[in-house]
Image 1 (tube, rainbow, N blue to C red):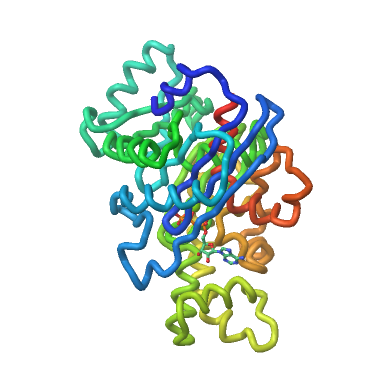
Image 2: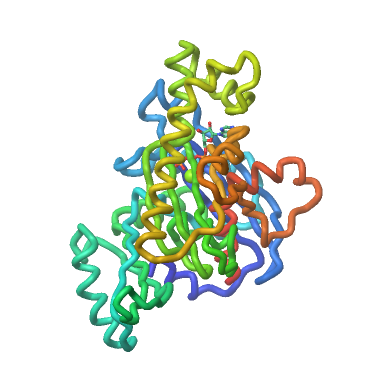
Length: 359
Ligand SMILES: Nc1ncnc2c1ncn2[C@@H]1O[C@H](COP(=O)(O)OP(=O)(O)OP(=O)(O)O)[C@@H](O)[C@H]1O
Ligand SMILES: [Mg+2]
């Protein structure tokens, strides 16, 4: 288990949830006790200009997290914002982990344990000695032939990734209490135990991930490389302007396509459509394989803040699409209400990680 070290400590009254993305670090500090937590502080550090300087990417797909640079950035952030606790829970991005939903015949716990030892070797493309493995029973159903099947979510993280995170946190002066995959953390903050079959689309900078949650359990997750930066890059190339200016334009105008925005929309739309197509594919695959219908889509991640995206998305996918609210189960002090929407959408993972500390 990745978090077996969590249980050895006495419960504290504050935790930091630390979400290290490809272009930003988000930290949410929650204070209080189980079932009554308040957002006491938060911080976001963005690393711009990573296209000019390739080594400025905090994390790049299929490339190892840059330990030195991430430590330095985390230190900058911790210097700027004074948090009251050093206890941290961090997330592992989808591209550094293996997540698979397995279906096994319904059987006793002991038999399941034995079967899983075999399944892990089959499903994870790395030697057992090099990975940490966790699995969770997430459901049961009768298949087309009337056989009872149990659904098991298998999660594997390379040891190398875990030691890299441990060392980043130690060197930044934080005490790392647990690691968790991003999708599980976001699910906790956004959905809790709500049983409604839901698709969560996390649209980040470099990559997007789609999680499907049913009965409060994560059932599947896929990721792809189209996200917010795909749109910015299209604007950079199409209009011949700087990356920073393209980011500004994108954030101001969105895809609402008013007068004079035609050109911007034309550049962005092919990438918006690719993202929506990937999400629809994930929805269809899930519904076909597991015979249940998704009821809603929650959009999170910075890319979800694109003006007009939710409405456009809804018109394409045909089920309700709304921005996710990572603060759903968290008290928010009134002075944070102005920035609440951005926190709700961009900090869902960080908040879910911090909530874990109180469980
Ligand atoms: N208001 C906004 N409108 C449109 N896009 C936005 C807005 N705010 C942020 N973004 C975009 O969100 C993206 C960053 O999102 P986020 O912070 O979720 O990424 P990340 O977690 O660092 O990346 P990843 O999840 O790929 O590792 C950027 O592409 C940025 O341009
Ligand atoms: Mg992210």
